[in-house]
Amino acid sequence: MRKNKVKDKGGKGRERRKEPRIKVEARVKIRLKTGQSEGPDQARKEELWAFTSELSVGGFRLLLPLKLEQGKQADIELYLPDLNKVLRIEAEVRWQQPSFVGGLYETGFEFKTLSAEDKISLMEFLYLHRAKKEAKGGKL
Image (tube, rainbow, N blue to C red; front, side, top):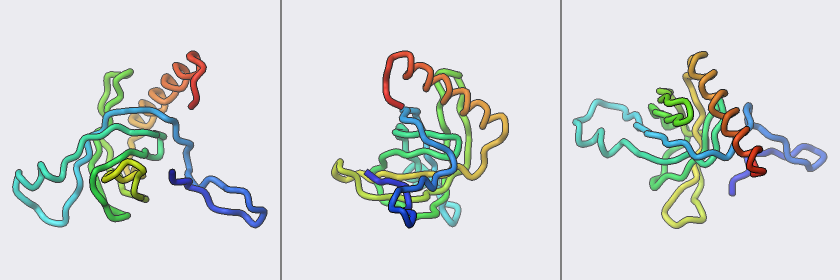
């Protein structure tokens, strides 16, 4: 499992992430951006569906069946079922590494465009999810 930490002189890990992530499954449609316009068949090949494993107002982590370059741009549709909303956000691959599950890659995306309204919706979704988990005595 990837730890997004750097070591201080004292040897303790320091979180580099701007916003803490919460373990939550949210459905995501990822449309990878290509450098040139291509036909509809190619566009379909560049569209992926997945579920997040972690989510924050800064980005998310998930498993993907293909290797992507750091910096790869994507248009994201993030489904928030508790709020009955879909957020449309531009994002970028920040890191990727092979998963323990064969043929899959753990991938971290950072949101590049997130309107104030969408940020509030995402914060509300995360708050509701956290409250549900805490009520059940589960880990965040």
